[in-house]
Image (cartoon, rainbow, N blue to C red):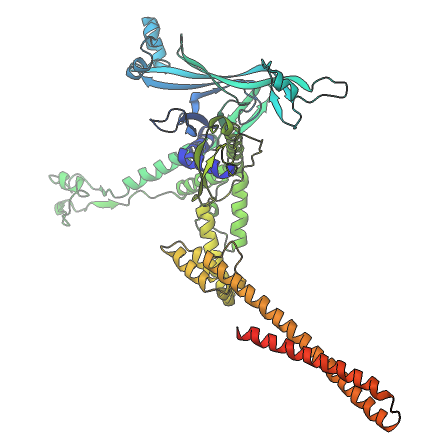
Amino acid sequence: MREGLIRNIQKVSIAEDAYDNALAGAVMCGVGNFGVELDYADDDAMGDQNINIIDLPDHMAVLWDRNMVNKTGKDATRCFVVENMTQQDFYQQWPWAQPNNIMIDVNLRGDLRMTGWVSINDVRVVNYWRMRKRKRTIALTIDGATIDITDNNDPLTMLKIAQREDGSPVIREVERRFVQMYTCSGSDILEGPYELPIDRIPIFRVPGWEVRVGEWRHRFGLVRFLKDPQRLHNYWRSVVAERLMQTPRAVWKATQEAVAGREADWRNSHLTDDPLLIWNGSSGQPPERVPPAQMEDAILEQAENTNQDLKDVSNIHEANLGMPSNEVSSLAIQARQRVSDTGTVIYHANLASAIEECGRVINELIPVVYDTPRVIKVLGPDQKTQLQLAINQFNDPKSIDITVGKYSVTCGVGPSYATKRIEQNANIVGLAQSMPEILQTSADIIVEAMDWPDAEKIAARLRNALPPGLLSPDEMTPQQQANAQQASQQQALAQQQAQRMAVAQWLKAQSDAMLNTARARNFAAEADNQPLKAQDQAMRTAADLTHMEYQNRLDAIRIGQGK
């Protein structure tokens, strides 16, 4: 349920844009950021708040604690998030405050404006986050729960605290971490402090490559080492373009007498469509056309070399971009793609770490934000609503109390659900072509995987036509479950009737055997020993009784089948 709730938070917040922008910052300038904030569910809500994942589009607007080590900023004790707003918005929110650019000396204002610290119409404010600690006293209760008893002198609460063998209460003092945020200008605290009971700053850092050399930390993205190859590539492509521009021009070599009085016609011959050019034949030497400038092979070779340099430096080749290359077989293409992924996997790995930290913070905030009775939406892996669930309904024993318990978070990063469906569709079609018999048992699943309108309706009809034994109880409709239960009852009744028939047949065989034995003894008694008649008569009577019992059971079975 929590997993589906976090999915819904991501969907409502359009978290994909925040993730993509942070990844773009890591690739382009070596760092990107996104954050988490709390906001009211809607404009007319009194107390219900939502958790939102926010985008921080300015990658350089976040200034981190220089002593932090964790790449996501988990161990940072302070963080500044800079924001620029118009003076009109500034005065509307804080009419009592003065923007800092008004208070700056006129002589310095021009220099600060050139460096970006001061602008004419914008005001700079900052959200200042810092980690704090607060001493708390916690105790272990008799039922195993941990409660906060700081400043709690209730005698009933003290009676619930567990005791050690020596009679002392099981309590201890801890320093509980929490985060504070102030909104500041250069000289005023505009708002705050605003507190959240979480163990890290709710801003998440997505770095590119980071190499620490002594006290210095060098950070760079994919673009930095592509600059020089790109400059060389641009230069040689410019040379090629210049030569190509010169190529169409018609260049003539002639004596002065040959074109005397017709210089303009020959100079502008490349600009006119006139196929006739007249020269002075009395000069005896006609104008001679000079061949256009030829493209040197070295220039073209250099342009190609710089193109390859870009691929080598970035480690992104044609196969990774889906373009045709020297690789022919699928294995060779996949091997080339793995080489490219090796050079860029660090960006996606850092993004995955930041998303996991974001999920952990959201998991910490869920008991704080969703602490009242309300209805939440739970999404499945396909981003479709699985259910709408009422939580914290304390008068309903079936309601879930979402404020209880602690949970861990694991982030799995891979293809999106839509990409997985495309791959599933291609694999299923290939499997159905190689194994046509699979269509007889899995046609509903194959059709449901197709991305075209009414595929689910067709899959439902195919599923209804399948034999009950192929479907699990979760896949059956209520009607199918009722039919399956009725068929199971009929099968059990048939088995019982078969067992009764088998018992009746066995009794008949026993009665026939006893009757034959009695007849044999009767013949022997009449021939040899008369006293044995009484014993034979008893055995015959028993055989008759067994036969009657067989007839009665057989009649009962027939009556049951008739019913």
